[in-house]
Amino acid sequence: GAGVSQSPRYKVTKRGQDVALRCDPISGHVSLYWYRQALGQGPEFLTYFNYEAQQDKSGLPNDRFSAERPEGSISTLTIQRTEQRDSAMYRCASSLRTGFNEKLFFGSGTQLSVL
Amino acid sequence: GESVGLHLPTLSVQEGDNSIINCAYSNSASDYFIWYKQESGKGPQFIIDIRSNMDKRQGQRVTVLLNKTVKHLSLQIAATQPGDSAVYFCAENNSGGGADGLTFGKGTHLIIQP
Image (spheres, rainbow over the protein chains, first blue to last red):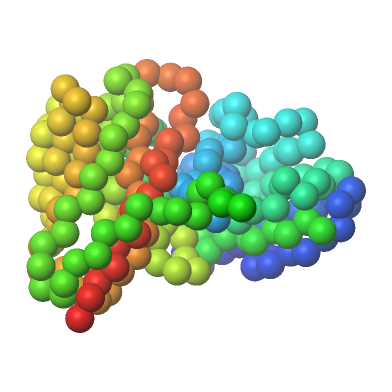
């Protein structure tokens, strides 16, 4: 596609339920990043992948959060046993190449609301 | 009660004037800096970047200045237009390992007055 695509655009769930957020990066982009953005704040790094390999998951808040990118393209961020504090905008970004200084292209995000 | 995080610093400028948005970063090991623009309802969009071996870089209507001595970064927008209205974030990264994700600042809301 033309840009990074995320689905669903909005997700409302009840506390304790599991959710899966999907990211479809720009075609051919090697690296994929997950960020979380609270209202009025800058994005906060969660984890990232080069191809299918998860390189760094130090930003994941706890073990309820996990991510995968099994074929090096689409990625899924899963949050188990959701809590109200998980409510936020979850953003995915991709870059053409690996490396700390590569330009990131962000998607429009998934707005998660945990009731 | 007051909600921390909703009170973005705001910069209000007249259309046609120049805008200067400032950012202080904390990690002296950071060697790559980026400015992002985020319009309402959209994801952050890359504007311009600069590496630590430079102190100035120019793009189209934008200039980024880096002062490593005081760990300060600024974004200058020339002849501000209504389409420049957005929240602007600075971000930093470093090549020396650790977390490879960008660290974003808190953002500045730029408001253009006609």
